[in-house]
Length: 103
Image 1 (cartoon, rainbow, N blue to C red):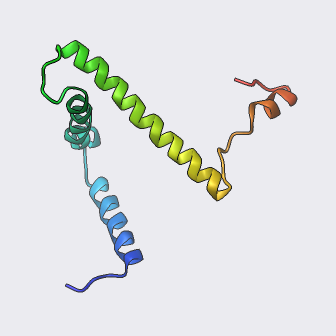
Image 2 (cartoon, rainbow, N blue to C red; image 1 turned 120 degrees about the vertical axis):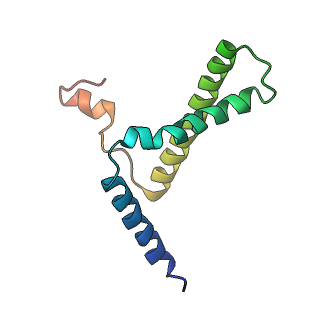
């Protein structure tokens, strides 16, 4: 099989994903194993030897997950700033000046 140009390969992958999800009856069930593995990765990160009580491990894993997601958000904001794009929402001060809610 010959190699497709990288742009075409990505496009083919997107088509394949769309076809797969169009044929999937229960998307929540289809993604459940991935979500469980994602959560387990944080448990392994905070308790690699499995010595913590389950409730403490769950609390620490939740904090590790939050830290991971916050790092992703930071990288996203930095990339938008570098590109010169930002959120679609105007700054809170602009909303307040127009009589809108700043919250």
